[in-house]
Image (cartoon, rainbow, N blue to C red; front, top):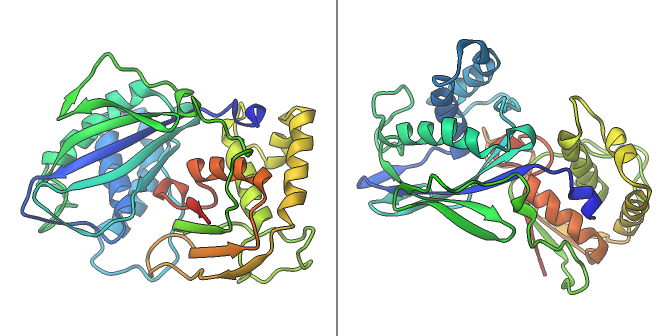
Amino acid sequence: MWDFIKPISLIRYLIVWRVNSTLVQLPRYLPYALSYVLGTLIVERLPLAQRRDWRPVLETLAEIVLSETIPSKPVVDVSWPLASVLFVYPNKRAFGQGELIFWELKLIGDSADHGLFLELILPAMEQAATMTDAPWYYRHSVWGHFDIEAIYASRGSHWEPFVSAGKLDLDYRATAQQWAEGLTFETDSAPPFRRLTWITPFELTLAEQSAGHAPHRSHNAVPLWDDVMGALLDRMTLFLPGKRHTPVDLWLALPQEEQTRLRDVLEQAHTATLQRHTLEAPPRGLPGRWIGTQVFSTIPASLLPYLELAAILHVGKYTHLGCGTFRLDF
């Protein structure tokens, strides 16, 4: 397993905003607005030559965020030129004075750079906290009505603060490897999980043919384990040198021992049969195809480390917007 995760460059930031207005009403899906607002303010800090790749992304996001109606057409899978995930913790939409809003920013691959966060993203966030004359501002908007209470960087399963009470520790340096420190990805003491709950919407490419599947699966078929694992392998191609790799390239790059282990895991995954599910389409205008819970006969222990990794990285489409993560339950 360690050979599998060794190439991963990732910095996870937990961001805490404190509302400083009587009432704040969050957008229907905050990651859209985060991507548009912070992206627009980031671009203002970039040299002209670097702005070109951002323009089509921000134009698409502007259509979604500034529209007063729920879009009826399928959502486009947009993402910043910086490989990233904007994961907002599920919560209510209305916040009062002094209440806290929590969300995670994950910088991935070549974008996992703490200096980049300090130079571009944090100043954009500070500007968004006070700016009230922008096109995205509206009555009871969160924009212009929050303070940056705290920011943490993950070290394994712990969060280390480097912004506290609005004060930045300039000596702190998050690295792209500390996210894995102390994480064992072991299965010896794993409880018998049976339930997989998608806490954000998701959309996976379904495997056309595999052991235990019909040769031709319906477009409406519910995703199964090899779909999740296939999405994880596709996600892992981000960490291979160069660009535009496939899961086959990833497989060939793995040591023989890791290939054997992963092949065994995929075989064992087929022993877990889907017993029932509550998957349904997310509210109209949101990204993703499904959200809900899947209940299996059991989840093989050998699969758990890979699922833990998939939940951290997010899998499938719309990952920049926080889609494709889940939790495991008994």
